[in-house]
Length: 125
Image 1 (cartoon, helix red, strand yellow):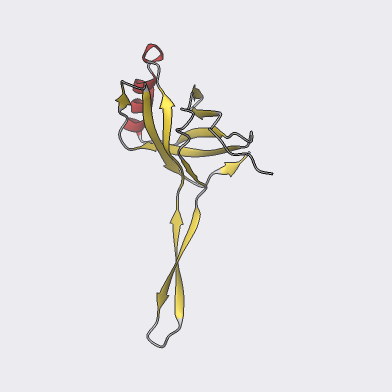
Image 2 (cartoon, rainbow, N blue to C red):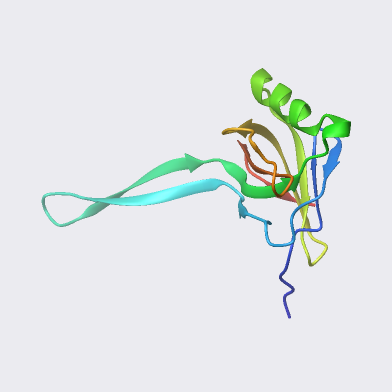
């Protein structure tokens, strides 16, 4: 039996963030993507592209009193990979050294930021 549901927790560079119940986003563990290209004689070849590991569209709560938005924006400005850990409903965690990508814009109605991070392959821990 597999368990699915909201992400339990997300941590970036040691700072824990609450994830919206319906905002667990997407996880790509990274690796290789295969594309088939045809040759003139009907045979084909495989073209591999390296794909980053990522957490995308995570709806994380930001606390202005902790300076969460400034923390995330500062890391985005630096452009350096930092450790990220996501723990899912089944109590399984994935980690990787990731860079924050995209806009760090807070929805003042919900208190959430849609967070995206990419980097090397994610590892199950």
